[in-house]
Image (cartoon, rainbow, N blue to C red; front, side, top):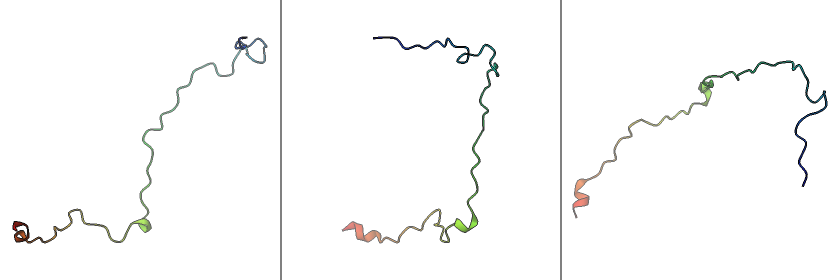
Length: 63
């Protein structure tokens, strides 16, 4: 089995003076901006936060 050639020998493959020798860190975008919900997309019937408890007769469970 032969090894693959990994080191460039030709000058065009490995330039002596690279254009940008400095290492650049990627910029941190921070928190992604989440757009507000459009007013037309809001549902008309918004459920209550605390729905009313159904009326239960306690005598029904004592049987």
